[in-house]
Length: 198
Image 1 (cartoon, rainbow, N blue to C red):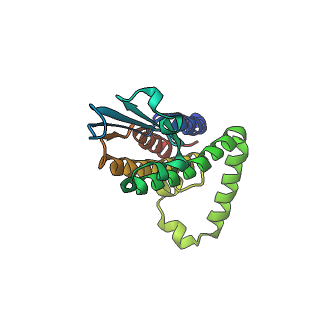
Image 2 (image 1 turned 90 degrees about the horizontal axis):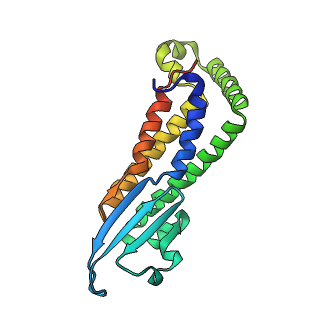
Image 3 (image 1 turned 120 degrees about the vertical axis):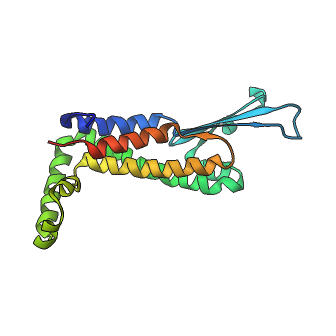
């Protein structure tokens, strides 16, 4: 589709690493609480493994480093109680992405070995499937239902995209949130799932 088949593995690895660097959402909220004179703006830039939480309108010296940067495992305890489910979903998705990131390093270092192992597993699965079931599945569908590492990454990106889109929608109930990286995850999922492999 958008990428040549011989570069699909590299795209899967690069997309994974790029996802680690992109913020998956950005939120901005203007507040005028009674305990402070004036208005301040809360900006949350959420990456997979951490969040930058800055309050414009409050001097930087009055904000601690713990208040500026939170790692994902701190989020459920940092957010207000009505946002804890969002924080837990984010934490679970980050753990899933951590496994995906490790797999991308293995794929980068040993791509031929991993693709050969996937082919061997595919042959074993194909041998175990009854002939009647194998004949019932159209060839075009069967070609997409493989253990190809690129398709596995595509499926993982689809899971990430769904989870981060749901998190974005949940955070949006409390503050306007834009799904920056989540949109890229949808694109990566579509590209990797649709690529024609040789």
